[in-house]
Length: 132
Image: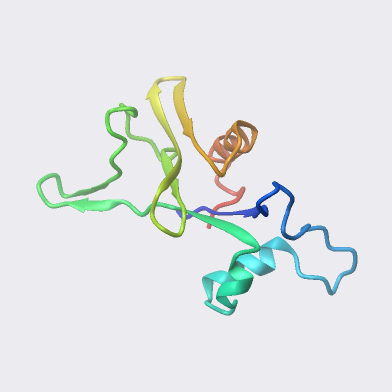
């Protein structure tokens, strides 16, 4: 499962570079724009309009013969709900994972707000929301 997140980028004064509010059917939506970025159909200048985060793909562990994500001890239970989001440079922006039967951790840093991170974590409970 993969997660793709788009966040409006801000200028040096904290104002959105582009307001993603289509006024007409023919206007680009953020989803259309994300699909264009994934297909390398957007110029490097236009890529700066949006901060694009993706789920980090798991690595294969030869010894254990399974895929894994390194949560640095923060996540203690395997779950399909566990995920990490990275930016285009590979820096971690969010990690969410199970630590107990009904307990989870949520670590977040810029460019996500705690509210955005919580919404993304909630989306992992419904496999049809925001995931391929």
